[in-house]
Length: 112
Image (tube, rainbow, N blue to C red):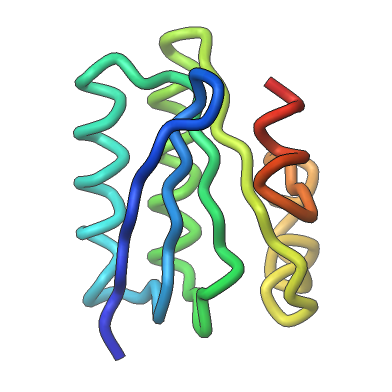
């Protein structure tokens, strides 16, 4: 399974829609996209994980790294996730307390 990434702007927030699997092989692609966006001045980012089928520790590391990048610029990185198996990973690792996790892209954008 590969990783698909698509970005678009909504009310000054950059939304990154991710699909497929985020693992040791595909995570660098997501990391590069977040780095590129922050480098281009996008500090309000929403990562939509609704189409993600698998997420491992490497993927979590990329999301944490992205959060650090945007926070260094007084920005935010919010997640969209309603899948129980992914939410469980965030809860077990304690990252549910670190990330703002929303039920929809609209809700995440409105939280800016």
